[in-house]
Length: 175
Image 1 (cartoon, rainbow, N blue to C red):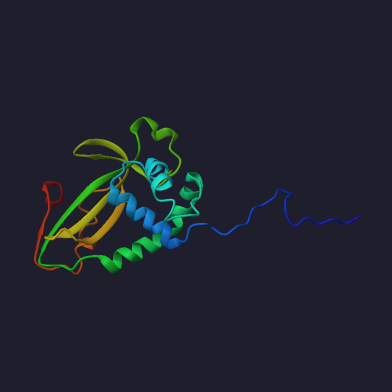
Image 2: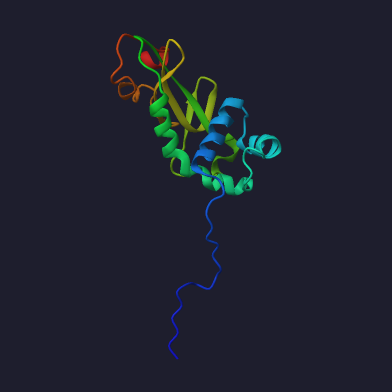
């Protein structure tokens, strides 16, 4: 008897996602507008309790986390359409984006191989650095994401391409 199996026998659930790309993007933008510190508390305590009418097919928190990477490129494209115009007065700065507490660096797996240990004016962190240029109205003109251990001055030439007028920075970027 010749038997050929197409699968390993484990049942696979193939189902369309319950949240659309636009809904995922809305949740990400809303999270930053409301200024919650952790996405989990935002999702469980705000979205699930107060916004169920607007999002009737909310998945579980863990499923939502699995879906979030799908909207990264769409969010970047959205940023490119809403970024401000250069007014001749620009400010550049960077800020650390810690992905975990320093005590958990050895156990961290989400950004393994991508995030690095870095130092900022507030101390050591493990994660990335967000470099941004804004105009005098506070509108974003350009952003870059680098590893935590990168030199703050290195992404500046790419950030300011196409800008004109005066550029202001702190001491770390000018040196």
